[in-house]
Image (tube, rainbow, N blue to C red; front, side, top):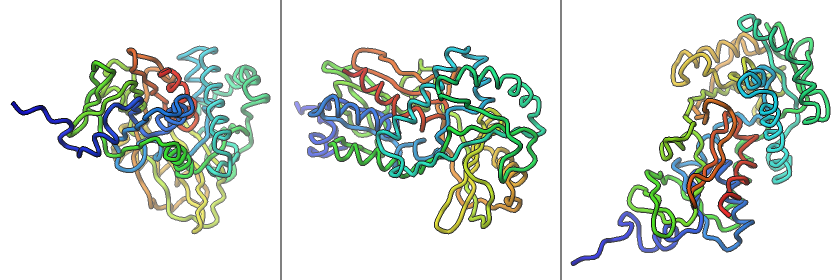
Length: 374
């Protein structure tokens, strides 16, 4: 009687070299998964570590973000405060700030193109009522966050350079921006140099308990793992349906070169659902605008048109701006913005739900996730 074949979609060498008896398998090659692998390598120098990524190029949402090193605009933090209360909101801000410091310590400012340019939140006529609520909340928020930042986090200013048609503008000196591609390359380089295998185009269809750990069922075979770390953020519920996390489409647009652009730094609007930044390229400056999910489904043309209208209306010099790059990313969101990081069963751990704050939260969340596997 013929024996069952193993991993019939793969060669003997592929099976032995990458799929059989892994010590640690991480699902998702985004910032969380890559930082988890870095920490796993530090804790387990001889471990066989493999990262499985379904995307053909890089790590899903981690290379589709805007590159903002943000910790929450005043109106976003007001919304958190109302849902979570004061203590949990402060803890969430502290976690984001700590995560950004982790990035800078791990990679250095120059390597990831970091710039501490400050930020501003603007309120238009359409959300003037929200602006009034934020103004009333601001003294309490600043007082509460003074120990986190060592100073006043937010300040009402006369207006934002390069921004037009906004009745209220609140600035912060603590936010900045970075080069998303440079950051991802640094993450990836550290993993490859430490002997971590990163396999792209491999979609995990099911996680099944096995005699010696877990089997990850993929197209054409299985991957065997002693420990499994689920770090695919918005898509995690496809494998673990009880998790309170779901994907939310985010639209991102980048303009053609705009000579003489006055706008500098970063900007938020309407609870962080709309965000803007300047991108300086060798050809000249461009504007990035993204989000808009408060206006509807990010897949729709309506959201796209509203983003373009906002850009042309409120950014000086962008009245005739044309879009050259456009893409969609997926946020992992739930009922609240707190990340999920926990052990579900022995050897099965999860670190997801970054709530649109993957740059700030991804690194340290990955470290926390890796330590669950010890």
